[in-house]
Amino acid sequence: MFQLGKTIVSEDLLQKDFVCNLTACKGACCVDGDAGAPLSLEETKILEEIYPKIKPFLRKQGIEAIEAQGTWVNGTDGDLETPLIDNKDCAYVIFDGKTALCGIEQAYNQGIIDWKKPVSCHLYPVRVKDFTEFAAVNYDKWDICDPACSLGQELEVPVYKFVKEALIRRFGEDWYAELETVAQELKKNPN
View 1 (cartoon, helix red, strand yellow):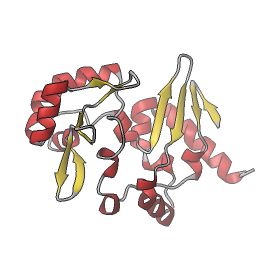
View 2 (cartoon, rainbow, N blue to C red):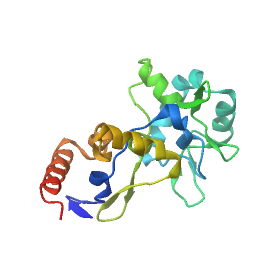
View 3 (cartoon, one colour):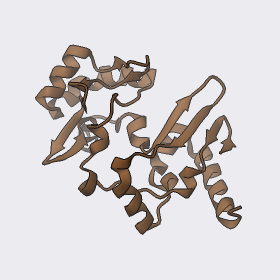
View 4 (spheres, rainbow, N blue to C red):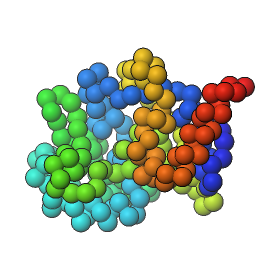
């Protein structure tokens, strides 16, 4: 672990490799698990605002879940998160064949909205936990992502490079530049 500003960062972001491999996992991170995607308070407001624009992109089951539960929910641990369909799929998930995709991101890709998706989704496999004085930035190892780890190793792409855009979105360009400096130093002096 090392500190960057008001963050404590796991060295796994620099040492582990990762590139999403949707052909292998079929977007399982959006349909497996026991909770919705973590959201910030600001993101809950964005979801409320953009819901009418993304609704046409969503599945019937997702629309029903959102209209019954709301565009966001308080999870069992009290955290803000996306609603689920029958405690499984994220309500915003759509499918291209058997591959899970994000309905929010589809609306973004078509220029309907200017918000890509929740930053927690954009950051995955990186998870951020905010505390009073700092944020913990960790790599979340999940066996459904084994194909992504293999592809990352094959392509030699460390986690932090794979999620560069999302890390900049969350922490800013200066923070990311510092992270790259730490990564370069660690590569020169691995001990």
